[in-house]
Amino acid sequence: MRYIGLNLIDQCKPDNWDVNSQRWAQRVQAAVDKSGELKKIGNKWRDFKPNFDRVFGEKCWYSEVPLIGTDFDVDHFRPKGDVKVSEKRYACRQRNGNTQNHGGYWWLAFEAKNYRYSCIEANRPRGEGGKHDYFPLMDETTRVWTPCNLAGHANETVKLLDPCRVEDVTLLSYVQYPGAATSRYSDETHPDEHARVSESAKRYNLNSKTIKGARSEVIKKVNQALDFMALYVTFPNEQQDAMNGFLEQMEQNLIDACDRKSPFSAAAVAFVRQKKHEPWLANLLPRLDLSD
Image (cartoon, rainbow, N blue to C red; front, top):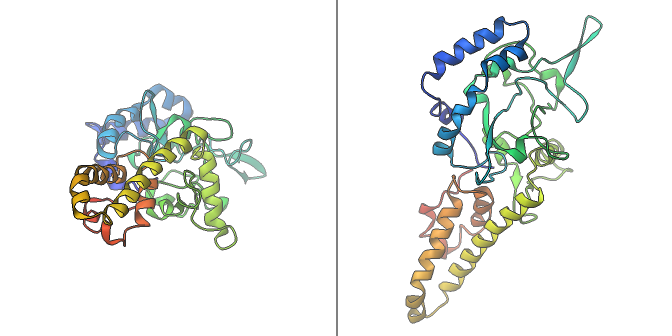
C-alpha cells in the first residue's frame, strides 16, 4: 500500500463533475428511498477509472495488484449503502428505545475524495475477505449518522487502513515475513495498530495466495538486484567493465520496482530501504522513490 494524496483525486474528476455531482447529491437528499435513488442515478463514479489509471497507475490502492485481464471497482471507502461492522452485524444505535441501522454514508456517494480504486479481490466479498460494505470503527460512538462534508468525519476512529492516510500506510511491514503484509508493531506494544493491520489484511485479502505470491516475485527480483550491486563493487575493474550492462539493468529494475505506479512497490521500497545506507547504492538513491 502506497500513500495516495487526497488532493490528487480531485485531478481525476471527469468533465463537469462538480456541477453534476451536486445535482445528483441533491436528488438523493430529497428522496425518501436513498438507495433506490442512487440506483436510478446509476454508477457515475466509474468515469473516474481511466483518470485513476493515468494519475496513480493501473493497480489497486489497497493491495497494489495490477490491472491485468480484469475489471477494477471504484470503492466508496465510507459505504454509500449498508454499513457492516462484522460478518453478520450492521452498524446500529438505540433511538427512543428502538434499534436503528445506519443508512449508509449516502451523502458521500458523489464525493470524489471518498473514492478508492480497488481490485475485485480487495473490494468484493471473497471468502472471509472483501471490503464491500464493511466499515468498522474502533469506537462506534464516533460514527457519523447525519449528512456533513468529508471533514466532518475526521473524528471517526476507522479500523480499516486507508491508503489516503500516510499514518495508516506506515503501519504495514513487508520484511518481517517476506511476501506477507503484516503489522509493523506487535500486539503487546501497539494493540490498536496491530488490530487495525490484522483486520485490514483480512478484509482487503492482502495475504491471499495469489496476491502474496505475486508480491513475493517482486521482492525476489529486488533482492536479486541488490545482491548483484553489492557483489559488483567487489569485482576487479576489468570484470566490472564486462558487467556494466548488467549493472545498468539491475539498477533499472530497482527504479521500476520502486515506482509508485508499479505493482507491489511498497514491498520493493521496504527491502531497498534496508540497504539505503550502503555506499554502493548511494549514486542510485536520487533516482529511487522511497517515500511512503
